[in-house]
Image 1 (spheres, rainbow, N blue to C red):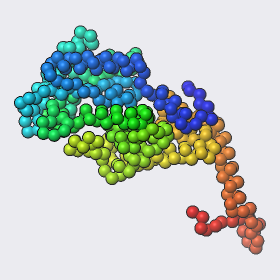
Image 2 (cartoon, rainbow, N blue to C red; image 1 turned 120 degrees about the vertical axis):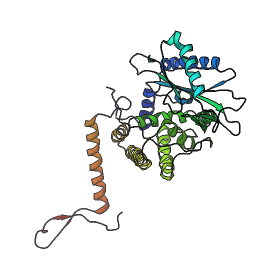
Image 3 (cartoon, rainbow, N blue to C red; image 1 turned 60 degrees about the horizontal axis):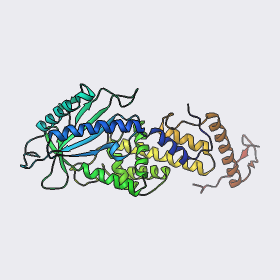
Image 4 (cartoon, rainbow, N blue to C red; image 1 turned 120 degrees about the horizontal axis):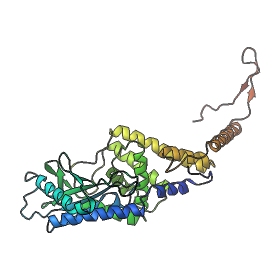
Length: 353
């Protein structure tokens, strides 16, 4: 169990928590090796193709334990045989799956490569975690073709195609990381962890898309999370998140009903504001406890000693009572007869909000 010092600031504690949940160098290296092996197999199968990378590793916001990797192959289509109203993606997906099985078998053994019933990607199950004790490692592979008439790609949607621009998505995120001095990826990582401990109301891509607008400059972690929450509440109160590349025909859907998601985000924003207020007023232990309750993960951000929490709460209550006494005067004696005789009365100003 981690020991928490009561005088730690919220910012210090959040940065320490961020480090605890970031992917290790060993996990990252192993995942990249597997991603590269898939890319080599796809490149050998589809002459003249290009590989793009996306997802948490490409975007710099991977969480530990690292359990998956994402990439795509853009297959040349000089005769424009593939696309909406034309040939579907099934044969390309089968070719990609067979190439992956064949190309990776010598090093990784008998992979499980799933195509049937998948909406967009080919799912690869390595049956071999990137590190001991971790869940099985998987890869999502998209087989795409260029859109000859507009920006972006056609990516599979069951037996037909959707418009998307994953290459631009990765470019936008890399630009945001640069302009924010890596604050973008760090805030996203923390929000993704909050999302993970709250039954995943949002997909990771929704979190990142919302952060492109709200975390575009250098910021502290507290201010960055608050800016993200405030923007997310505003955007999702109006509607679903639009595609940042302005290519996809449909917005990014929430995993739960949007009104439920907004309520959860509002509650998180209130918790952040309360923590900041408590710290500002001189109650660092209460502030840290509120922040830890927000993330609900003792390994990532443990709650402080609860005896210290109770002591500081008692001090806060006493201080508030003293302030109230100063503001409204000492108790006045009620004179007269009956039950109210000799009972203390607190002066009240009816206009006080």
